[in-house]
Amino acid sequence: MTDLAAGVVPVVGGPSLPQERRLVTEIPGPKALALHARRVAAVASGIGSTLPIEVVAAGGGVLVDSDGNSLIDLGSGIAVVNVGNAAPAVAQAVAAQAAAFTHTCFMITPYEGYVAVCEHLNRLTPGDHAKKSALFNSGAEAVENAVKIARHATGRTAIVVMEHAYHGRTNLTMALTAKSMPYKAGFGPFAPDIYRVPMSYPYRSGGVDSGAEAAAAAIDHIRTEIGADTVAAVLVEPIQGEGGFIVPGTGYLPALVEFCNESGILFIADEIQTGFGRTGAWFACEHEGIVPDLITTAKGIAGGLPLAAVTGRADVMDAVHSGGLGGTYGGNPVACAAALATIDLLESSGLIVQAQQLGAAMRTRLDAMKSRDRGIGEVRGRGMMQAIELVKPGTTQPDPERVRAVLAICHSQGVVTLSAGTYGNVIRFLPPLVISEHLLHEGLDVVSEALASTR
Ligand code: PLZ
Image (cartoon, rainbow, N blue to C red; front, side):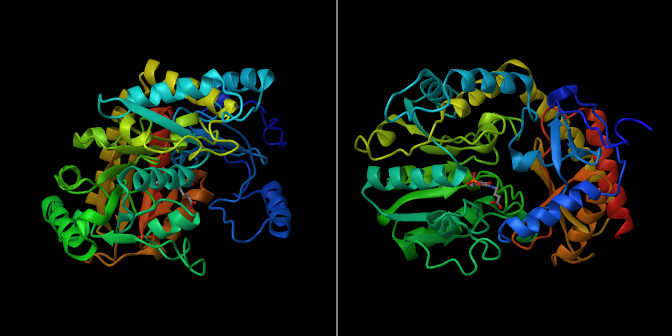
């Protein structure tokens, strides 16, 4: 019997973990079930979990559980550990910073890491104009602050968001988020002066590349029903995340940016899920050649530590009075140290090119699955952010039941996969950018078998 079979698992993370799928118990195994029982008794049931194992280590493309199983990670903790879980450079930077000091509050006594993260964000985000940044803790908090800044800078209050949008779970960001269940149902009333306009969703507009028409419809809605001169900002995810990895049609985003520029409206790109190499570019806006006035980032910014930012035009960012933005923990020094190591890894290790190459390989596999499965309506995404939308064969009717069945098989076979979509009928793939090609293919083999057995 091996150590692993005896339930002894390595305690180290990072790439030193064997990069393999290894099933030694059923998933979830006995230790995971024991934790689950404690969790049901202790943790509020409003917090869900997709795959209730007990993680004890993770790195590269795998998660290891307390039962000794090693699972392939095709989720990256929802697009967070782009540079890998417990990436050694990140872990070392965190340890060194934690040993020096863990917190002072940047608003009280500053430190260099915060400033350095802002300098990098100002340099790396799209556009070569003068930029400034402010740091926060979560994606939702960054979005809230982008809205505060936009309202203050323009003196206007209306905020325009898209169908299928996801921007968070706080009160303001629930209002910005489209989907009722589970994000909004029962949690109102919601913040006012938020307006939803049509999103370009080529698959659901007859499969035609409807970017220009969808932009015209959105702009018409803003002009006639909201009033362009009341609008502070248009807020868009350049590829929608929770909404189902919807890639807008050609020209949609550039047309909106042009309209915003002409109308004194700020264009805010929410790159919280798409940023930091995920799509094969630093930021997804680059694929469209657009330059937002403000950009929100989080998730992939700090290799797994909680950090978020608003970056944008210096004149807009500086419109807010001193003391008008902040928070106790925003830009925590340990999170900033993790971000600096993460950014350094993304810049120096070729990971963004790797995201293009592995993303192309993943896309080829998913396209092949679609060619033999009439229940796959569309394959879409960019780089290492790809998805399949499942429908009843021969129709565009969503098939969320099959998504649940496919995910259940993948999970039992040791592959972490996530769903998405307004209709819950999308399976999304967000592997760490550092996953080995072999492991990626093995994970997709399992997905392919799960699709075959539910056809
Ligand atoms: N904007 C584009 O994707 C977070 C949500 C998971 P936070 N997406 C994952 C869940 O069910 O809560 C997200 C996003 C975009 C904003 C957010 C919010 O980021 O860090 O979760 O607050």
